[in-house]
Image (cartoon, rainbow, N blue to C red; front, side, top):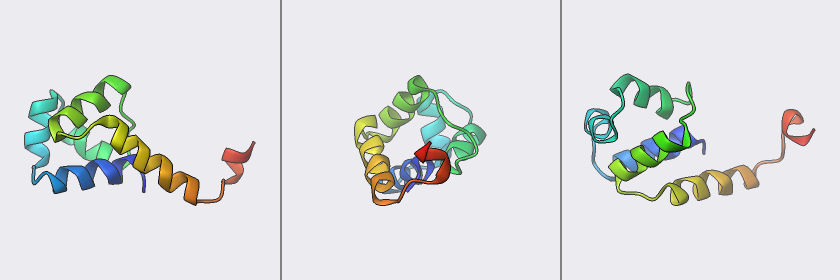
Length: 80
């Protein structure tokens, strides 16, 4: 799973709309959509704000992403 997938999953689990999360996080709804679709990567500050709006620690989101990356073999660009 990617970071965007995990953010979307957490938002849906919290039964929140993109609009509600974006307002609570102080970001544009279109930007949140870009994050969820992996078209943009958030800064650490934005990630913390989005996760706070979701009621989920950023460390949990990142741990799930890291766990899924460990399950995949490294791609050519990751291996050096």
